[in-house]
Image 1 (cartoon, helix red, strand yellow):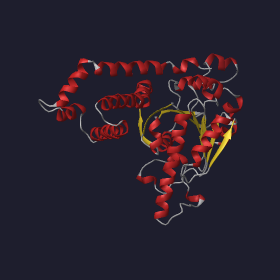
Image 2 (image 1 turned 120 degrees about the vertical axis):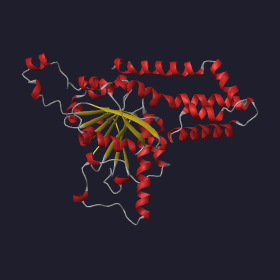
Image 3 (image 1 turned 120 degrees about the horizontal axis):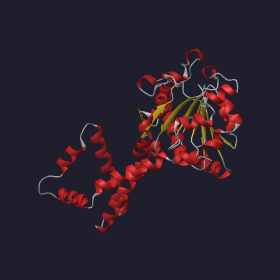
Image 4 (image 1 turned 30 degrees about the vertical axis):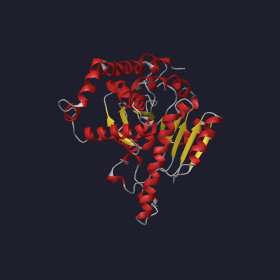
Length: 343
């Protein structure tokens, strides 16, 4: 994902080679959400067409039951970097049922940004400077909403690249009064979705800059709520949440893979064991989300003298709790420096 941009009736989305997995997940999640809504409209005997005067402002969009009938993007422009990415995306879209037209553009991000009201940035963290540093892009971003899904890159770092936080002494030397700096017009919202966007089950966290309006944040919430859940958090907690929400799908997959190895050793077929293990994890998550505390749930399953407690004791002997906690802490530390090696 390199750039994505939104207008009231159009959505511009860029899939970059580096972070194309997450970018594609967001794209396909939005397409699935749109297809589902189109199907509902068809069942209700409506084609979803609305008159221009009925179209609400994009900042009023909120993904909820109250969103029914709101004007959604009518086109997606997906910007890719290489011919290989373009061909891969075409093949993926060819087998995907969706109602929104998708136009793929290669190597012309500035045009997409210029045409948009809202831009989604999703390049490699170390490529952020080269992506935003182009004069045409910086000019096009003035007065717009910029959503960043770059791991480890803070809002002040983005503002610095956009020359929105030039030191006051330099600004005065250049004849620009800090209070009247008209470059401070790009509202930035930082977001971290995860790869479960593919199945519209992403857990996304967001935080915003000081000049982002409530309506800006509401629009971002609507956008990511179409592919999962959204939680606002303080900027200071973002790296920890990047690890907890963005990285742990790999942790969970690793844990399931370990269970599969044990199941195969016990004579089960790997394919059947995978379905059982994944559904068991899903059911457990649903119980916790329904209000069951993990400790209470564990006690309910580990009955006295039973087999579960023996397995739990083995996990404790191997210090699984500490290993997992330390892995999350190290992941958070790594996320905090991703943006420090910008190119």
